[in-house]
Image (tube, rainbow, N blue to C red; front, side, top):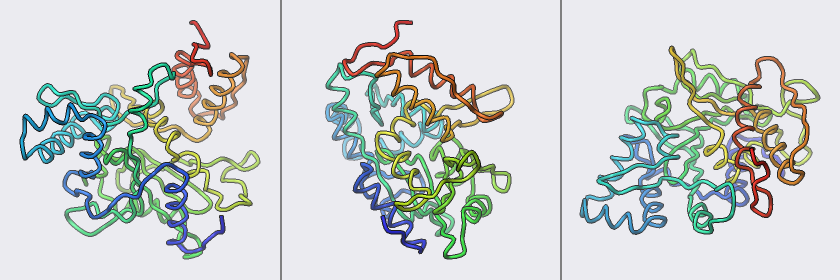
Length: 326
């Protein structure tokens, strides 16, 4: 991919990759509901397409007000239970069970679940005006079936803006109380990205917001290695955000961690995600062996072990047989 050194060119390159290779469709910023912080058109169309019988039951309940009533109920559930819980478990409205996303099953034994998984609509929406107070916008919003899950701020050093400027933008101008940024309730992760580096956070807290690196590492050091085919950070949209990878992260990796004093959303670092996926792929074909995973101190070994154990417990091989029996 030829490298365009403008910020708009950088944004264009990401959009083109996601739309042509990543399994996304272009979202419409004009229909984004600022009050409820979601895309009502995509959400309603997904429900109608994937659950026509359930939708008809809701029509029978609400009549001509069905779309507005359902959208507001979904928003309320997201506010009260959190986006992740609603995406994974769905909701019940007047006795009607509604799913808001379908995740890939561990095996291919049930063709219906595979068909429903294909119904998911992933959107990449640019320049989304999210506030009812001003005309601030985020560069990119990633959503699943109309529900926003990630915000992205893009910068380009050739315009004298780097990932540090994106981080500062989140800290200084992104109000955590805006519906789109409310902790757990809407976007689950926020990325600061330039052509060389990626940082992310799962909670905006003004100037206290803490970003973690989401980079590949370069010869045992920080950052990312040179990419002869384009941007150093292209792994982010070509691999991490690609349809199957992104749905897998939402289904099996992100989790809410609670203790007596606090609550946080845990999003996998790149090295954690990479380790788990490589071991799963090898175990699926080789039946499992002894492995050594090297993580530095404080880099999340416990979460890597937990994610891996969870995946191994229901891992199926290419013939849809369980790889392990304990």
